Image (cartoon, rainbow, N blue to C red; front, top):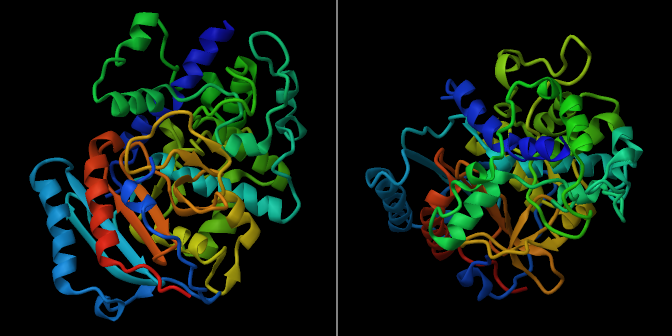
Length: 426
């Protein structure tokens, strides 16, 4: 029974994200080029800085440069690589490009999938700033069900911690679909598409009793046990972020959705962002169920958002934690999130890096193992990123899948690097 539950849990993120897409249809490796670039010192940004519309010419960007970028995006739609695509570029806090092609609009709400992970992690870091939790606290300090967690029937040698959850090292089973897509991307083929069928592994019961609330989903994970020793291996685990969200609830004594709205979405002006409920729960925006428990969401993959909302979130990261004159997250917390916690143990396909911070892919590192370019792709192809050496925030949105759009994203990022200058040497 333990292995049966584990196999079902491994599939929950991919299945639920697909269902969220249906329910939400009304919402309108290291990069070789980057690795060769010299490190630059980031220009200090004013604490009150917030995104505003700017003149591209004042940033050294001419119309032929922008048209060359449009050609890439337009051709991707015309060639049916993607049904639609949108892109926002903000240089030194000013929006210099914001356009959409195909079936997307510039203000459309889309499913962010795993691009949601840094948002959830930021809530945990906010609580750490306020001394309501510590990253190296064992999970069982907040969630008693983890006191009995086992690995292959025995207690783990090391207790899983909050930090482990945020860098996918908790030992919880990894996402089946994410691992399958990564293998397909590396191998250039779908040889493992029938792997689960051949093993006779069942899918996750979508509306099972264990999925009716956030706490229930976490209890089910704890009962199923660990797949590997905590801290030993990187296993991309979206459901682990449900555990992180539940830790945040307990530490803050507040439902996670209310917490993220009050502490992050509202201060950043992310008025079009929210986590989506699943099934009938999606018809309500209430964070709690009649039972008093938080409704079931995918904290590691269930956000709906827009170009400008996610640009504000990444601009806050680029600003060292400040936005709209408020220090939302400490500079130390930002550095921790952007600093290498682990390698992926596999070769990620370009243009993503092979190092991971706290819920960020680190696409290029400096000598101190801090990301100079950080990002987080989502299953549907979304990829927000920031480039500290260019004072650049970029948000690339599609609704396809990230394997299909990698070539397009690589071309877009190469063109952006060509038209946005590096910061001058100090």
